[in-house]
Amino acid sequence: MAENYTATILLVEDEPFLRKGIRLNLEAEGFRVIEYEKADDVLDRQNSFAEIALGIFDIMLPGQTDGLELCKKIRSRSDFPVIFLTARSGLDDKLEAFQAGADDYITKPFELEELLVRVQARLRNRVSVAASETIGAFRLDLDSGMATSQSGEVVRFNDREKKILQLLLLNRGRPVHRSDILDHAWSSAESPTNRTVDNYIVKFRKVFEEDPAHPRWFITRHGQGYELALP
Image (cartoon, rainbow, N blue to C red):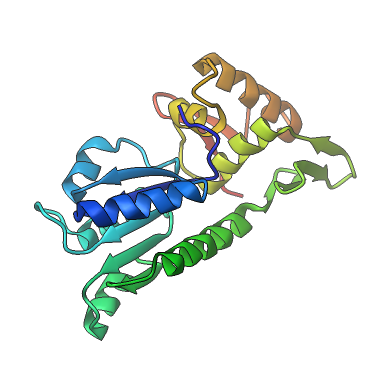
C-alpha cells in the first residue's frame, strides 16, 4: 500500500538514466511513481488506472506498442492527463499526439524544472474539477472537507474520508476497486480490509442518499468495486 504521497504518476520511458532522474525528482516533490520501460508492460501488468493522477509517456518505445497507442488504449479506460516526452519536434508529431489524447507535449532535451512545473499545473487543473461537486442534495467541498445540503445541513469529513471521496470523484461514472481505494487512502503501516472500505461507503450513503438501502449515488458494482454515479 502507498505511503503518504500526494498523487500517483505513471512514467513510461525506455531510457534508464532519464527514467531514474525523472522518478527521483518526482518522488522528491512528494509523488509516488509507477515506472515502466515498455508500453506493452503497462498494458500487461497494470490492471487498474483508478489510482493514476497523471501519465508521462515517451512516444518512441520498444515493443509492439508506442506511446501514442498506449495513450489511445488508456483513454478508453481512464481520463487522467498525459504529458508526452519525445525527441519528435515537428508540428505533425505534436498534432498526432494531441489527437491520441495528450494533454501536454515536451520535446527532448528538456529541463526537469519545466517538467515539474507542467506536472503541477496539470494536477491543479484536474483537482479543481473535483474540488467542488454536487452529490444528491449536497455540495461537497473537498478543500474544506465539508458537504452542505440545500437545506443548510453541514457534514464534515476527516482526511481519510476526503481521500476516498476524491478518488471516487476523479473516477465518477466508473467503478473503483476496493484495492485501489485501500491503496489511495491507507498507508502500508496500516492493515485495513475490504470490509473497512464497505463501512466508509455505508457512512457516505447515510449522508448523501435519500434512501441508503437503495442507493442512487454510491453504487455497488459486483466484482468491480464502488461507483459514484454521474449527476
